[in-house]
Image (cartoon, rainbow, N blue to C red; front, top):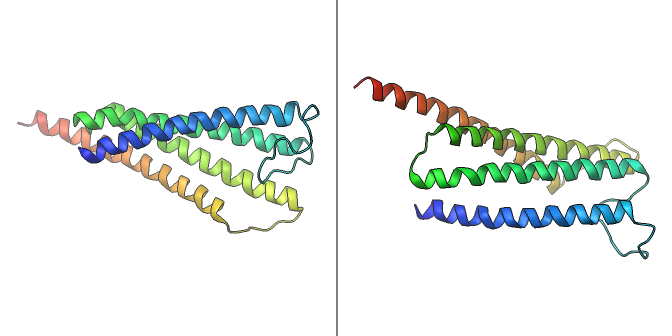
Length: 169
């Protein structure tokens, strides 16, 4: 139980930090892309983004939406912890949240990976794949998403077996 309680605290802190980051991301995006003419030179620097034209603002918007979905995925993960604390491991609610979490993490990982590769090609005007830590993080997020989908399937089958076992007494 100590592990689950520690996990709950860490996920709660992570979730609050994600909400704060999302808010800052949106504010910076609005300021940078909406009011950049009014800001002094160098007032806001966005790492790894050089705004050539509207295409980069589209990439930024797609990543902002993906980040919002990532926050939603962590929210689903956060919803499973109280049920795990009660010992109700095979409830339908847990499997639904794990499935949603998995789908969202896969979507966010794929979206971020594609935006990263396309934006690198767009900025450098050449097609090349640079292996860096961001690509590993996107691939890891996809893998974690697949694990959560697998967990939802396993927990669903375990729930069915538990119900069948309770009926055959």
